[in-house]
Length: 451
Image (cartoon, rainbow, N blue to C red):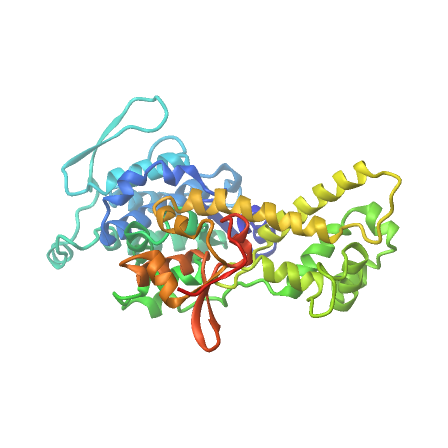
């Protein structure tokens, strides 16, 4: 999300270069190498991320034509960086590499204990047989300090990072290496994901320069998962510059919604929108919201306002609301409302978006979440998730234990992490609920399963 609009702004205003590898949702480039990833140990992943990160720096910064003018007086520093790059056993090809090729080569380099490795790029351009560690040899002291289980690349990273920092100092630039969408790269709650992300956190501590920042966007529940049970001695170093958890509040959802609606000139004119107040006043935003939407979804009393209803019904089991889900709900609601207007052109309506339209939007969002999120991103957990199909909306603890089987405790934790279950209480006793977000998609009926 961030890398879609940040690069030019950050370069212009802050002299920051942004390099990124994973940009599109459900990037299939990583998925293409699932079999290879499943075979890597945590130490292998440290080597993988080291090579991957410095390759991004090289391909998207050092040899990127966009920055030639900015690096025009840095030939000596570029040569020094390239030498350090080659000394680490990473070949300097005579043409830029795509993300697909970077991943292919990175995984090939991980076979570094073999004297040679053969690499066939994805394109039909033949294959290369290369000597690993063909550059400057490791110091004997460094070699003897490593065991068979230790990663090899960190020994080279200091020199590569130093040369990269010298280049950035000479050009008066900063480099951010963005690693985003990590919850979509590996099978969620899998051993491979845990090893991969633990390896990534270990890698972060290797890049300590103020000129070079590796920016990792990681869901808080994933962070909890990868340190659970095993501990993580380097966690303090990895999270030393950690920002606050990004969560969308009800007010932020309101702001996003009204700004998107009234960005259309015809709507802004028709409703006589004061653009200054729309940007600065939450109360004004709320007033304009209810010029478009009905006040409540169901009739009072004891019914929450429409905005609160939308917010609560798009929460997952971790109480997370995403703009993407809210936008999807509202888009479907608008489609339903347009169809209703076409069916009854002479009719009138008090508000542009009615309650039936919003209810329809939630139902369609729930079905979409089942297919594009639960089934698509958690195929290895689907057999467990499927046990909720056609069931109730809330379960007592004995009922959920019986439903999930022998390993019910681990299964329940997995489903909570996925967001398809949430903890609750009923008469002082613990329960497990299916969030509103998933009820229609999982064909749940409104009932409590006691036993």
